[in-house]
Length: 195
Length: 336
Image 1 (tube, chains in turn blue, red):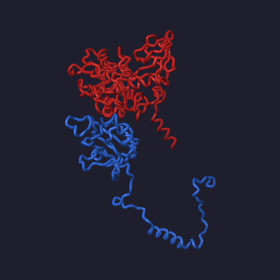
Image 2 (tube, chains in turn orange, green):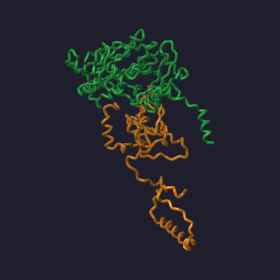
Image 3 (cartoon, rainbow over the protein chains, first blue to last red):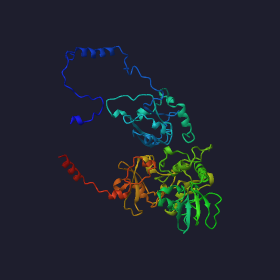
Image 4 (cartoon, chains in turn brown, blue):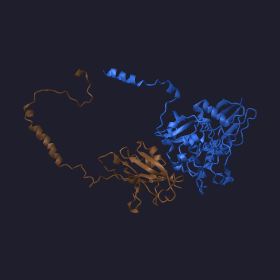
């Protein structure tokens, strides 16, 4: 039955139970050969990086943890229009909208805002489609890396983790994501948005 | 019966049919010919004297009739022009007309705020469709847009006058379907606006239909205000026995929660059976309704994302109901 079977790869070998020679039986040459490989690796350059002390260089337009930007007056730009959620191929974004009340004009730019805005970072594939879909230039991907955790729940990021801090010194710079190509692309849309 | 040719497709229609209605008949006869149907923003089949305001249904009549084959000198509103025997009409086949329609869209959008990200109508808005299909990418208008403060007409309807394109549909609904109209268009020309007498509440059993007929987001449901984007809700056909109206509606669900109730819009975006305010605003419990199944949504619509339905209702009827106990027994027998 075994003879009729086709091998799946060319790496498979037929097992033989031929008698070992004397050299094979004393094992020492094989052990020395193996050890020499191990010892050679001690003197090689190590590929391991001591993260977080040491960091690999990343691209300037690296797509990492998202941010919901505030405008220059500190108001949230997001209006919960749902375009990021509909553009998201992983269906990682959910939101609940609410109406801005009188007196909250300094918090939200338009009459509707996202009361709840959640991104499941385990679902997210960091493709950047949400950023491209956003008509209000509210959501951006940044070069920050999402922290690891032991549980699943902390990976559902709410507004407390996503919205940019009000403090001007703690603002997150996304200008690197705004490459000349991106700016020209967004300028083509300037007539309709943000008026 | 007059014969009319629209974009090379011929149809025989009864005397007195408008070009728009003839085009819709072609579209209903063969889905592949839907492109001959001009868009309509103000015309509404069920509302008498509607149409003729928005000019988006313009068509070019390249041959008047068999008896008088001269072309009409300029584009005509297809919703208000009757067909003649032997008439030849161009809709999408005339580049000149497409250019004219582009101009119409630009005019309609002059004062429109384009606040689609916060508008509840986004996703089912006729103006969005119209400008997407026929409009230009940019507006050349540089001046201040006409703005109004949004007002509440009654506790169920919100009026955003900035979004209004003055199609008069809601006024005609109030005139023809409800009794005692209390709102209308005041002022003239550029400053005209829909308004009630000193913010009078529109309070009538059928006033909610103003929301359904509004082609833009000017009149929206306050009970649905910002509740969800339309494309995150699931439209289901449903009915209940109602003494005032037919009770045949569409429920817009999120889970088991009824977020919104609307009338059933046909393929041309028109409601054929108007529903009463009790059905629309007060019956927000799924137990009040008998759900018939998912509503058919055009696959080109954004509402169709994540919306699953069987191809036709016939298929649903033909498919035998799965006999679950038998399936389980068969499986067990096989495994033995």
